[in-house]
Image (tube, rainbow, N blue to C red; front, side):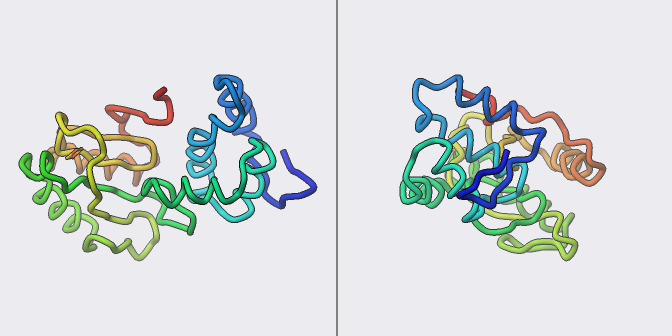
Length: 177
Ligand code: FES
């Protein structure tokens, strides 16, 4: 799926999913957020070329698309580590010991928050509330949300990504709504 006005190409395996997403919404423009997820999931980030492509396909201005990308911290407009582990450090998760989870992940990966591993596979971030306060501590990786984390569960999640067999998330936000 390539366009004359855009050099962005949607991977062939994502074309049917794109069509399904657009069909589910009353207007093309209202499919913007799941389409951003779809593109970020396949490319790792939302490039300038992807913004042009989305603008043409969904009939949304590029300014509006950039506004949405910059407002929601889960969207990325620059290349990222393959897996960015975003651990919530707001009050509810903090009470449930998210800090020790963050420390454990940092030790396992050999990084501090804000850094990524030398092989570019993992990055670690502390983030604001992920909207799952009753399930803390929680961590988001792409559209996947992992809840009620323990050090053992975190180790399994990391190993799952390393072996290319991701642990099934507690919630997949790509499938919500
Ligand atoms: S405080 Fe962690 S999800 Fe809300």
